[in-house]
Length: 144
Image (tube, rainbow, N blue to C red; front, side, top):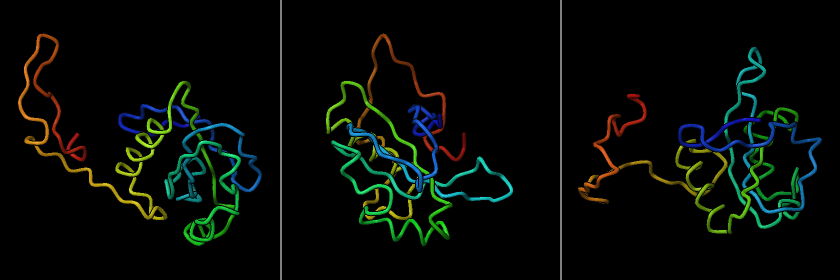
């Protein structure tokens, strides 16, 4: 298991070597990882994030439209790994939301879509309820 997402909130299955993986015939979110440091075998970089109604129909491992970019980025297909998330009861829009969040956090180099992680107060405005308190952390995650 590998945890990805905001505050590592999603428990993904894997990572598994992409070259030997058979995608399950189920909906889910997947991330393609590249080994980022040969001296640290458990250190990976997220290079692509996707979602599907049926993971087995995505052309994984190497018939996916982005597979060539993954292989180039990882310096070979044997440096590629995959992890996947089953979203029980989740709809397509829920999987899209998770994928977009992961793209905003990790900025995967092989994704065409890019999402800004900026935050502005006027987007939500001020609020005050009995169950909320002021933020205790900085809005810039690099300062945490």
